[in-house]
Length: 129
Image (cartoon, rainbow, N blue to C red; front, side, top):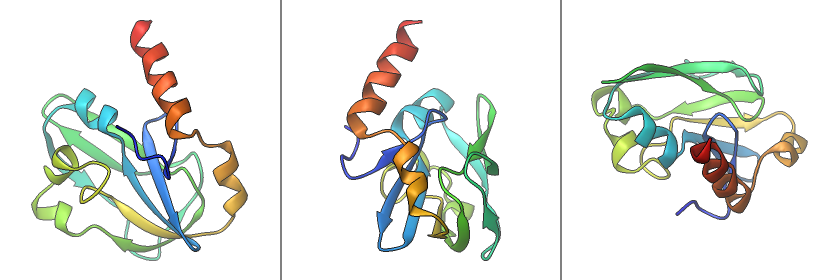
Protein backbone atom coordinates (compact mmCIF):
# COMPACT_ATOMS: atom_id res chain seq x y z
CA UNK A 1 0.00 0.00 0.00
CA UNK A 2 2.82 2.43 0.83
CA UNK A 3 5.37 3.06 -1.92
CA UNK A 4 8.61 1.28 -1.05
CA UNK A 5 10.85 4.05 -2.43
CA UNK A 6 9.34 6.70 -0.10
CA UNK A 7 10.40 7.48 3.48
CA UNK A 8 7.88 8.19 6.25
CA UNK A 9 7.54 10.14 9.51
CA UNK A 10 5.73 9.35 12.76
CA UNK A 11 3.56 12.40 12.02
CA UNK A 12 2.34 10.63 8.84
CA UNK A 13 4.17 12.57 6.15
CA UNK A 14 6.03 10.95 3.27
CA UNK A 15 8.99 12.06 1.20
CA UNK A 16 10.11 10.87 -2.23
CA UNK A 17 13.57 11.90 -3.39
CA UNK A 18 14.75 12.50 -6.96
CA UNK A 19 18.31 13.83 -7.04
CA UNK A 20 18.40 16.59 -4.44
CA UNK A 21 14.68 17.43 -4.65
CA UNK A 22 12.25 15.96 -2.14
CA UNK A 23 8.51 15.74 -2.83
CA UNK A 24 6.48 15.80 0.40
CA UNK A 25 2.91 14.76 1.13
CA UNK A 26 0.73 13.18 3.78
CA UNK A 27 0.15 9.44 3.89
CA UNK A 28 -2.94 7.51 2.98
CA UNK A 29 -3.35 6.72 6.68
CA UNK A 30 -3.26 10.44 7.55
CA UNK A 31 -5.85 11.44 4.96
CA UNK A 32 -8.04 8.50 6.04
CA UNK A 33 -7.91 9.68 9.67
CA UNK A 34 -8.68 13.27 8.64
CA UNK A 35 -11.64 12.49 6.42
CA UNK A 36 -12.63 14.74 3.52
CA UNK A 37 -9.98 17.43 3.02
CA UNK A 38 -11.57 20.83 2.33
CA UNK A 39 -8.60 23.22 2.53
CA UNK A 40 -4.82 23.14 2.53
CA UNK A 41 -2.41 25.90 3.56
CA UNK A 42 1.03 25.62 1.97
CA UNK A 43 4.18 27.71 2.26
CA UNK A 44 5.30 30.12 -0.45
CA UNK A 45 7.89 29.10 -3.00
CA UNK A 46 11.40 29.79 -1.64
CA UNK A 47 10.20 29.28 1.96
CA UNK A 48 12.66 27.46 4.22
CA UNK A 49 11.64 24.09 5.60
CA UNK A 50 13.16 22.71 8.80
CA UNK A 51 12.97 19.00 9.60
CA UNK A 52 10.38 18.34 12.29
CA UNK A 53 8.80 21.79 12.09
CA UNK A 54 5.39 22.70 10.66
CA UNK A 55 5.12 24.21 7.21
CA UNK A 56 1.37 24.22 6.63
CA UNK A 57 -2.00 22.81 7.58
CA UNK A 58 -4.60 20.46 6.18
CA UNK A 59 -8.21 21.17 7.09
CA UNK A 60 -10.84 18.47 6.85
CA UNK A 61 -14.46 18.13 7.84
CA UNK A 62 -13.18 16.65 11.14
CA UNK A 63 -10.14 18.71 12.13
CA UNK A 64 -7.24 20.97 11.22
CA UNK A 65 -3.85 19.23 11.27
CA UNK A 66 -0.37 20.64 11.08
CA UNK A 67 1.96 19.33 8.40
CA UNK A 68 5.53 18.65 9.55
CA UNK A 69 8.48 18.68 7.22
CA UNK A 70 10.46 15.43 7.11
CA UNK A 71 13.50 17.27 5.73
CA UNK A 72 15.18 20.69 5.73
CA UNK A 73 15.48 22.68 2.54
CA UNK A 74 14.05 25.38 0.29
CA UNK A 75 10.61 25.06 -1.28
CA UNK A 76 10.96 25.04 -5.07
CA UNK A 77 7.35 24.24 -5.93
CA UNK A 78 3.95 23.93 -4.29
CA UNK A 79 1.10 21.81 -5.62
CA UNK A 80 -1.09 24.66 -6.81
CA UNK A 81 -3.78 22.20 -7.95
CA UNK A 82 -4.63 21.67 -4.27
CA UNK A 83 -5.75 25.30 -3.88
CA UNK A 84 -8.84 24.65 -6.01
CA UNK A 85 -9.05 20.89 -5.48
CA UNK A 86 -7.82 19.92 -1.98
CA UNK A 87 -9.72 16.64 -2.31
CA UNK A 88 -6.81 15.38 -4.46
CA UNK A 89 -5.14 14.61 -1.12
CA UNK A 90 -7.92 12.10 -0.39
CA UNK A 91 -8.05 10.75 -3.93
CA UNK A 92 -4.32 10.18 -4.45
CA UNK A 93 -2.29 10.98 -1.32
CA UNK A 94 0.92 9.35 -2.59
CA UNK A 95 0.65 10.79 -6.11
CA UNK A 96 -1.30 13.83 -7.35
CA UNK A 97 -2.01 14.86 -3.74
CA UNK A 98 1.62 15.82 -3.04
CA UNK A 99 2.07 19.10 -1.17
CA UNK A 100 5.49 20.66 -1.83
CA UNK A 101 8.82 20.01 -3.51
CA UNK A 102 11.97 21.22 -1.81
CA UNK A 103 15.67 21.26 -2.58
CA UNK A 104 17.15 19.29 0.31
CA UNK A 105 19.76 20.90 2.54
CA UNK A 106 20.94 17.64 4.14
CA UNK A 107 20.28 14.21 2.61
CA UNK A 108 21.46 12.56 5.85
CA UNK A 109 18.12 13.58 7.40
CA UNK A 110 16.52 10.81 5.35
CA UNK A 111 18.33 8.25 7.51
CA UNK A 112 16.08 9.10 10.48
CA UNK A 113 12.88 8.41 8.53
CA UNK A 114 11.00 5.10 8.34
CA UNK A 115 10.90 2.70 5.43
CA UNK A 116 7.48 1.67 4.08
CA UNK A 117 7.68 -1.59 6.04
CA UNK A 118 8.61 0.23 9.26
CA UNK A 119 5.80 2.73 8.71
CA UNK A 120 3.23 -0.02 8.20
CA UNK A 121 4.35 -1.64 11.46
CA UNK A 122 4.19 1.75 13.19
CA UNK A 123 0.59 2.30 12.03
CA UNK A 124 -0.41 -1.21 13.10
CA UNK A 125 1.03 -0.64 16.59
CA UNK A 126 -0.56 2.83 16.81
CA UNK A 127 -3.97 1.43 15.78
CA UNK A 128 -3.82 -1.30 18.42
CA UNK A 129 -3.34 1.14 21.30
